[in-house]
Length: 405
Ligand SMILES: Cc1cc2nc3c(=O)[nH]c(=O)nc-3n(C[C@H](O)[C@H](O)[C@H](O)COP(=O)(O)OP(=O)(O)OC[C@H]3O[C@@H](n4cnc5c(N)ncnc54)[C@H](O)[C@@H]3O)c2cc1C
Image 1 (cartoon, rainbow, N blue to C red):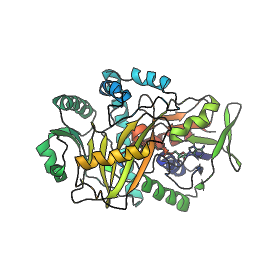
Image 2: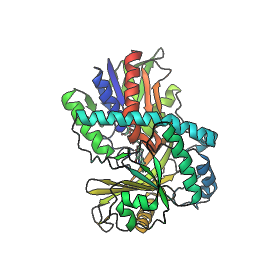
Image 3: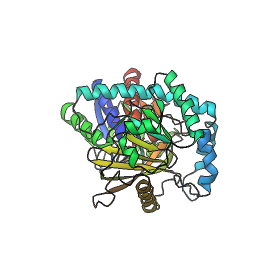
Image 4: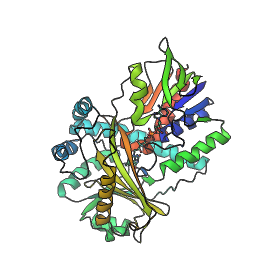
């Protein structure tokens, strides 16, 4: 079949990979001039296979009044967002009970573990350079309440085969000596030895090159899609600014922009853009080797080769990017205060970035067929698109092959 992949982020490129492996003729459509130029561009780089905790949970709900009152530095909310949060928030709140949060987290675990296995296979098959590191991950904890909650979730995950444990700050410092140079006031940590790091954009670009060179996948870059054309409830063609391309099937990997093309077909994704930021700097004298997350401050330190990416914050500001300068400034301040030696903060070579996490109310991505025959989704990966990309791509490619045109 001729299958269109709509969007060249990490989920689109991963989807193109599995479709090509199943013998389909694949065309990738992307409106920007490079692969991974959307949310996949400078994310935190964590392959957080064990840290798939649903964002909709009682602890997050308890923070909402502070967020709305602008008293939570890790999250901002704007009434003037130009995005209708009301329907999304109602759905999100429904998912926020302890029972639902547990259920949603456990539903994602096998997908993440599948992704880890597929990443192992892919790295054995292709030698892609994307600053991969397999040292594990630490999530830092402070209060007794946080530790108790983390212990409960770790126990639940372990019952489902996920390797994760709570360690004291002394044990954590043995695992990651750079913690001794951090000022976080931490008392314990969640340790996940099976979590990895890698640059999602470098991965996507390298895999796209392999697809183009060895598997005859066509990339139509700088070609914005205007419409997914259908006939008698079946997909017919992809209409772009330049052309109309007949296809047998298409997979929408459009992240936060999914509704622009799907809503005219009356397919509603309920994806909310949640803005986050990153800074990429040269490493410092004490850059952590493991990925280190401070969940209270919503900041993560990820070493990628000779660079360190500091990422974080979760802002409910719709598609508004006016606050980016302030927010990346604050991110730098928080990071510098918490880990003064983790990066060369004075370097002139620094890159600041903002991206939109495509978040569904459950945190679970939308993967599989739609009511339009031949049209499939692989979108809405929220904070975990890099982590889950391979598993959801493999799943949707199998759906396409089974479903026919
Ligand atoms: C600050 C931050 C930190 C993060 N950290 C992590 C992390 O550590 N680990 C993790 O797993 N995830 C992380 N994420 C989430 C992850 O980055 C996303 O889930 C993932 O990048 C989504 O990928 P995607 O391919 O679905 O979307 P995108 O990368 O946004 O790709 C969608 C593509 O579709 C294209 N497109 C849209 N509309 C059209 C159109 N009409 N025509 C043509 N092309 C179109 C866009 O240009 C874009 O290239 C983070 C996100 C942020 C913001």
